[in-house]
Image (cartoon, rainbow, N blue to C red):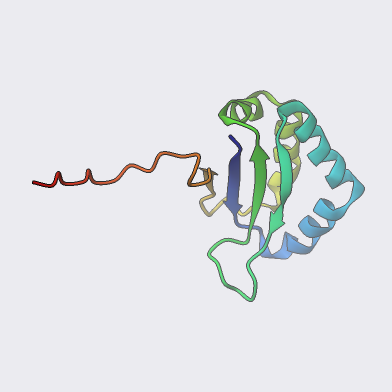
Length: 118
């Protein structure tokens, strides 16, 4: 059952161009490949709001084959290296948001119990 790991974050305004250049560069691709190799996750991409629609500067999407893959990020040297390198671009005065998403067919959605018919 694939799970999507999504991280929303803010970038420092004056560093946004440098961030985009790094992510598109060979160095950026090598960073991503290293994380993919160590974790088993697949990087889908970095997304920016279109025409100002959206709260955050950007978000990264990763596809994980299962929930166990998420735990590999904690122990990944490549992941920690990437975060250290990218930290200069993040606006750490604002809160990040991360979430794990699964498809409706794969997750159990808990709601109000149905009333029994008499």
